[in-house]
Image 1 (cartoon, rainbow, N blue to C red):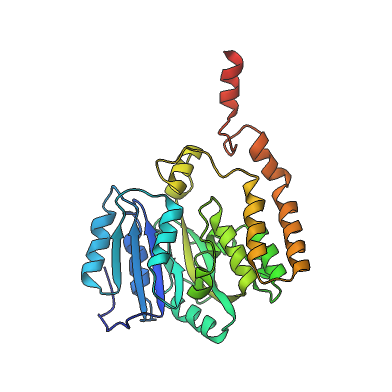
Image 2: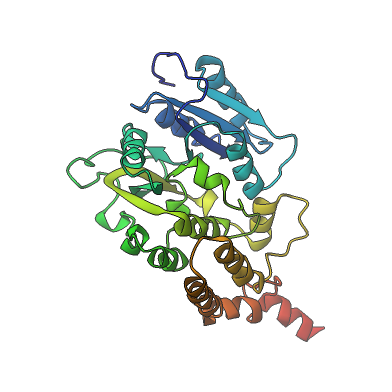
Length: 324
């Protein structure tokens, strides 16, 4: 483990990085190293462990014992991904906040550049770094970044943001959030804590997109056009059954049903009504949500048997019912 020399910390550091984790022994050490190795020193790292059963606890406690910027909190039971993500922010004290995944890597200058972007844009709510996708165990994740290329990923793995996310028009930003393919990347940006505290910190699947839509109505997103964030793709974060997904999101005691499809537009419209938009703009945004929510893709999840079916009905189950 490599960490910079200890330095005195402000009572309330400018940046809090929150790292929720569950059974992350394979990658969490590298993720923590990339956070503690930041060139920006005024930060704290809060780790909320969702009752891991592997070596995650011992790994994280070793960092806590050697670096005063690290605070490790272990849940007594698995409360689900969403509640654990929300918990780490509720503990945060920094002016700016960033969620961190236990298997991703941050460039050493990432926080420095993101803080500078928010400092220079006081009305902005979020600073978004350029991101790349990589697989498994790279020897040098930063290789070739300064030259605009990478030794471990090809050009197609650069996250292609919808540039409407960075519009000064809140409706453009809202539409882009609804339609983006990358809410799970954007949510790991640096967020102004005061704006984040005004949101609902929603307890539903897809809460990252819902939260981003709420922030998009509050203020601008600033793009930092440097490759500073690296998202890891591996079997453990993509291969899950529907039941495993529900348990992961909500905790082991959840009854097993996803949020009903008809709740999705309701959640977004409630977010719109809470915003400071004009009445005509709120109506326009609400109509956009309704049209988006009833696309064929979402209707299929409710009506068509398969792995994404809301009721958990698969074609195999239908065949069994027919045979019986």
